Image (cartoon, rainbow, N blue to C red; front, side, top):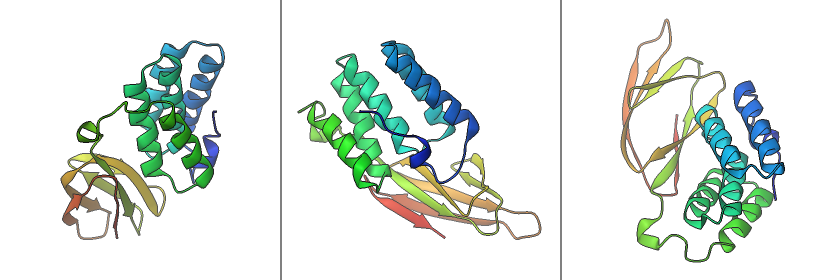
Length: 171
C-alpha cells in the first residue's frame, strides 16, 4: 500500500515531490523497474523521506526482489516515527521473511542536524544548504565529520559517531 509523500516531509522539496509522483504513476501503470529508478532519484533529493523508501520497497517487492525491498522497508522504519507508515513498512518486511540475514542488514543511522542560525552544513565534505531548523540525513555507521558555516559566525567542526538504526541529534 502506498502512502502520501507530503505526509512524510515537514517541508516542501519540489523536485523530490515531482519525482515521487512520477514514481507513483509508473507504479500504478505496472512499470515497476522505471518506478524503482524514479524513486531512487527522489531519494537523492530527499534522503530523509520515509514514504519514498516505502514505495521503493513496494516497487521492488512487485518485482519479487525481496532482498532489495527489505532494505528499503528497514530504512523507512529507521527514519520514521509515524505508526501508520511504520506499520506499512513492517507489512512489506513481513512479505519478505528471511530476505536479509541479520549479519547482512544495512548499517546506517539517522543524523538529525539542528542548525540555528540557518546556513551551510558539511557532512564528510558533502555540503547541504540548511533552510529549516532541523535536517535529517541517512548516513552510514561510523565516524563522520560535521562542519557548520554561516556568514558572520565562526566556523564550527565536530566529529560524531553514528550507530546502526539509531538517531543522533547534533545541536
